[in-house]
Image 1 (cartoon, rainbow, N blue to C red):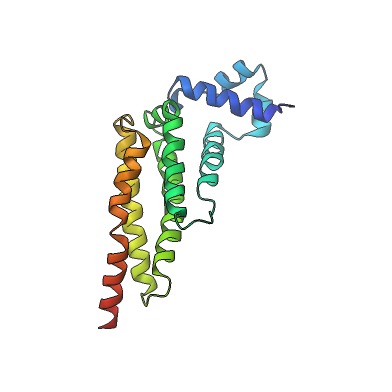
Image 2: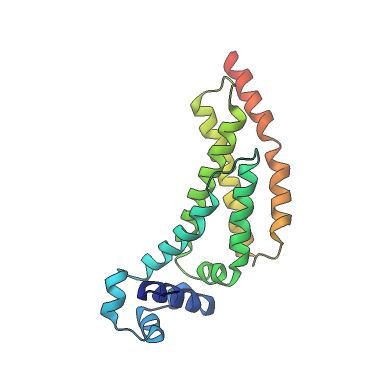
Amino acid sequence: MNVTTKDKIFQTFLEILNEKPFDKITVRDIVERCNINRNTFYYYYSDIYELLEELFKMEFSEMVSKYNSGFRWLVGFSRMIETCYGNKRIINNICASKSYEYLETYLFKSCREIMADYVTEIAAGKNISRDNLEFIISYHQYGVIGIISEWFRTGMREEPQQIIKQFLIVFEGLLPAIETAEKREKR
């Protein structure tokens, strides 16, 4: 397989991110380890934040892809949590940096897509306003990201399956919430 210079820069970034917090990584660290000059780095990336953004896009775009089963949301959340757990050192090094908000932003976006898909599927055929659907989506999105953020901050001690089981308990309340909203709108 032919490894491009861009791939080499990205892989080197991941290696270094496994070793130290994101704020401590410099372009110099990357170019020295890659054995390239700074101009080559800047040909592909404007800064290390662009590398971080590429990492999130790459990791989280797959987890929000659509599935054919009725449990797309479960697959989506499971992939999100397992991906984070599988990259625990990288997540810890991002959390230990001032750039944690970048990670949180991508998780937030991914979670939004998964929740919107799930809530819309459950609400299909129900007479519920878009405002109420948006509120239910946002409520659960914030809850999920809050739990995941706390899980990150406490070092991801729980196994992914334990977190997923807890989400399953909470998500059982989605249908009653949608039904309650539908009843109130009929009044």
